[in-house]
Amino acid sequence: MSDVRRIALFGPECTGKTTLASRLAAHFGEPWSAEYVRQFWDEHSGVITAADLDAVARGQMANEDAAAARARRAVFCDTELLTCTLWDDLLFPGACPPWVRAEAERRARAFTLYLFCDTDLPWRPDPQRCYPDPAGRAMCRRLWRETLATRALPCVEISGSWDEREARAIAAVTAVL
Image (cartoon, rainbow, N blue to C red; front, side, top):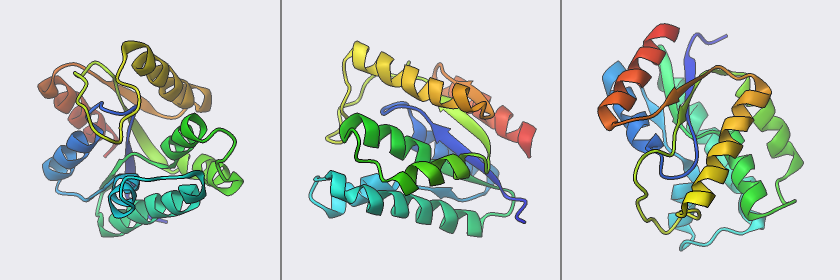
């Protein structure tokens, strides 16, 4: 069994997950895994359909596992499979493959810590983003937060300025290492 701690950067879109994952990886000298759906989006001319959900989930898992294989103490995952199921449900209701949902539940238990990135950062437009309005952001925040709470997953909330976010995240990771 691996002693590598899996740390998930978790939260709705435009909450700084990618930036924080890369900063934590640099700070701790450990790898991070990119959010696979961004790569998939780019490789498929910005089109994702319900038929692609299986491939997106497999790519996400492969990114996480490849980064974890390079880690000594920790791997920082810019999103994870629970997030894939949340987006599947929002964008393609009823289309999430059952194996993805089951695997997301199983893999969630392997994460040592979820860093829940709050929606208090300014919105930055991006062709992949769907909920720029305050009501949409609040709805997403609630869904992601409930996902952690209903599963009693270990979580630290990350909010505030970039300096505050980074300091809180570093302290949370240090505590589990």
